[in-house]
Amino acid sequence: MDTQGYGRLRRKIMTVTLVFSLVPLFALGFFVHLQFSKTYHEKIIRNLERAVDNRQKALDIFLDERVSQLKSLAYTHSYQQLSDPAQLNAIFNVVQTNSKSYVDMGVIDQNGEHVAYVGPFSLKRVNYKDEPWFHETMLKGQYVSDVFMGFRKFPHFIIAVMRREGDRTWILRATIDSEAFSSLVRGIHTGELGDAYLVNTEGVLQTPSRLAGPVMTKLSMPLPSPATAGNKDGTVIEERPVKDRTMIVGMAWLQRVPWLLVIMEDPKEELSALVRAQSIAAAMVAGGILLIITGAALTARSIINKLIKADREKAALDASLMQSSKMAALGKLAAGVAHEVNNPLTLIRESAGWIKDLLVDEDPEKMLHLEEIDVAANKIEMHVDRAKAVTHRMLGFGRRMEPMQENVSLNLLTDQTLKFLESEALHRNIEIIKRLDESIPNTTTDMAQIQQVILNILDNAIDAVGSNGAITVSTGKAEDGREIYVAIADTGCGIPKEKLNTIFDPFFTTKKVGEGTGLGLAICYGILEKLGGRVEVQSEEGKGSTFTIFLPVV
Image (tube, rainbow, N blue to C red; front, top):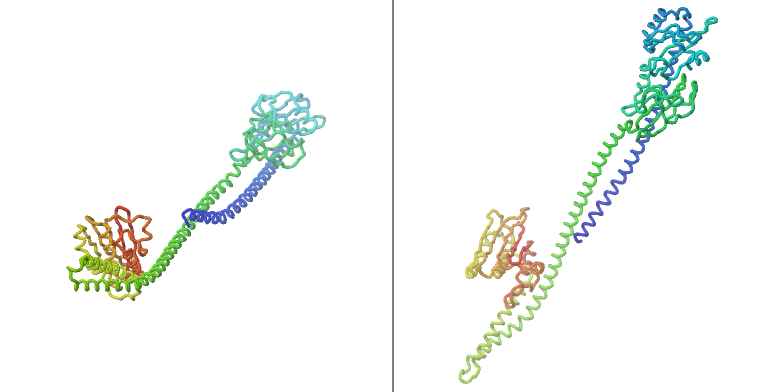
């Protein structure tokens, strides 16, 4: 498999891992988010509905209590008593002691004349016969007004009760403290962005609003239904746009007066806890996704690395098996060829020798070409010897001798082998540098065959350098401690990259014709394979080559 194939496989592994990991995570997260948001939203609606209902009851109770309080005063005291300013002041002080809900209090006769007054304004003898609330009170017996300006010239509302005392009809009226009443409405927890206020049937604010404005501001918002005092349409909860925001609005009509209680909450503010929880959950999910992606990438890389390693080991094993098969087949072929060629070569050399013997008995004066025949016979012997040397190597390549088992010091063996070639290296002005590691252990192997391997590679190194170069011979121990090695590095011409895979093939040579048989490295490879060793080569064209012979430590 090539690099692109490994890349595609890595992406497939990551994709499958991420799909099977993230899809359930996203599905679960979406379901939890949906259900949690729905539940939280419903909880906000229920809480707002409960708050509107409770506050509506509290306001009704407040007004009912004040109406009852005034009725008690009116029916437990006579007109003469309450029309006395001193006594009215004393009663007012007692009432204010228990609850500071009133601003002032007064008694109005049936003609609308203000006969007695207690309070901060100059309203004594003011006539109310033209005021709407006066007529409503006289008609209904008791009355809670909307907020109006009146003679005080500031927004307020009053509670008035009527009593018939014989042939006299009179009204006890009190002004409710707007600040105390508004605090009941503002006391509702609406958050920093919410609002709470009262509005009458005409859409006029009865208490100040944070968003809509001060008291008596006319609102344009639609009311839930045309309600009248004493009727209740129930609590209405709905979402409305308010000042570029969507607010959850709870509304309920009061029982005592036709006022609509409005409570607004910003869902974003109410959902801020949920948003924070979701943000934390989202951060955790993002961290989980990052962890999953990292895990998938590491897992895919680990699998691909192991696959690459397995493929390389398989390729090396296949190459080794192929090389072994090739070497075995060529070995048999070489042995057969050498055996068949050796016999005629022997006859040729014996015939050449016999010719030379016959020439000794000839008279040089009578034999015209004696000297040429002798030269030819010598050339025949020389070339036969050369051919026999080749066949001898071919027989050695094809021979399958059982290796010897000896205790071998690789340093000593290397040093002895170098001595064979020191003279030739000196003649070619090639420096041999020895870096032998004295700490490497001995091993059990065939000393003669290993010496042949080292000798072949050293001989090739000298041929590669030619002259005026250097050969560095070093020994050492592999990192895992299971092998020892001897490395032979030369400063020769190097081996072209495209030929590195064929240098151990039989009859492959880079030498000139007649200077090499191409069997040296093949024989080295075969010997090391039989002895459980191996050989590696690193080469750069123009800079030299390094052959490293590894032997197992036995």
